[in-house]
Length: 147
Image (cartoon, rainbow, N blue to C red; front, side, top):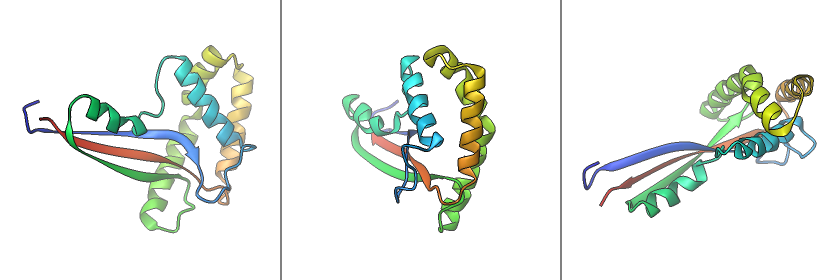
């Protein structure tokens, strides 16, 4: 990269939350999220690099570093039409990919059986159909200039 050039990085903070407390510690969705993060880190990967991007860029010598943080809803609960559409796509990718996300990590890193993962996936799908659960996570877009 030439001096004066810009670099943009975009990634997630995969730790689920809710704006209104509707996602509680009893939800399988939140349990899955915490276990997924634990298993991913146990495998030597970082599942939530988004919040770290700014620091990585600054430590690498970039200047004029700017951060934008976006809400990524899970499901169609937002009233904002754009966020509703983002949430619908996010819901689809999560519900269709649960087994792909969980089987290897949960069995190899956490010792879960296939049957246990199947039960978790079924509970998560059931919860995600509930429009009263307002789950979300964040996406970070960070850009900076090389001196």
